[in-house]
Length: 287
Image (tube, rainbow, N blue to C red; front, top):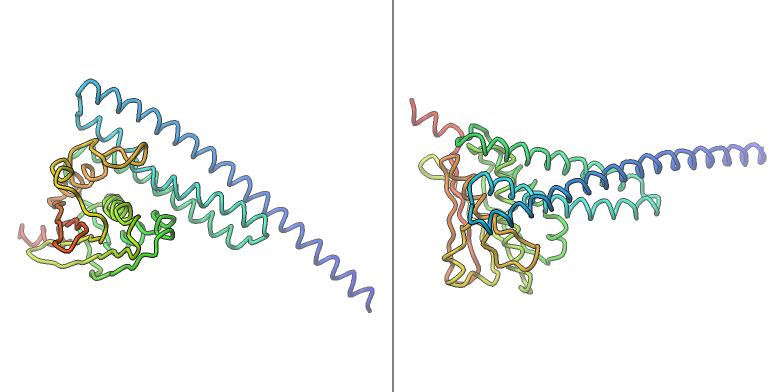
């Protein structure tokens, strides 16, 4: 009986090792494919950045130039998340944490899908001036936090969520883009804040939903306020920003009949106010 039990245990161990080896090989292959896709997107980003430099030197900041260059900007956040996740996946594989590695790969695939939706959305935006999509505010907020996950983890952030599950008259991906920009800017402003706080405050009136994204960061100086929504204006060092986030966000909001504005609270920090039409409001007005 002992011999049979020992042989059964050895066979079980052998099967487990084979399964781990097979899953590890699959995960490594997936990781290599992802690295290749990231390299391709980096090359595209560099090509777009060179095109941007040529446009700036020539003084030709046409709308198509802004949109093509902004693709690189909009892909930076998911790329950063992909780099972190792919690195973590390798470490989880080395430790044999296959379930966690598998979950990471699922998130990576979702981010890649999102990057594809971003480029498709930007192409669509360049072709037409209106937007007939519908978006869930709650889902868009969750998606933005997913993209910004690594940066959120680096801050002892207190988050105040005070908004409803509103359905808004804007494409889902475009709303996610806007929120990634606004929340990302807030995180940048709070890097030196020992007790960072972020407020997402919503209210509805006159067929529109008003979302206020407020932080307790360093605020915006008077000179910077004059240029805040100008394309290619940025206060971020080096390659951290191309100065298109707020310009693009304001354009996306305006395309739906909404708006993006900035407030400077007396007690410090900054608040960006996003106004977007509620689903059904436009139909109600036309009847």
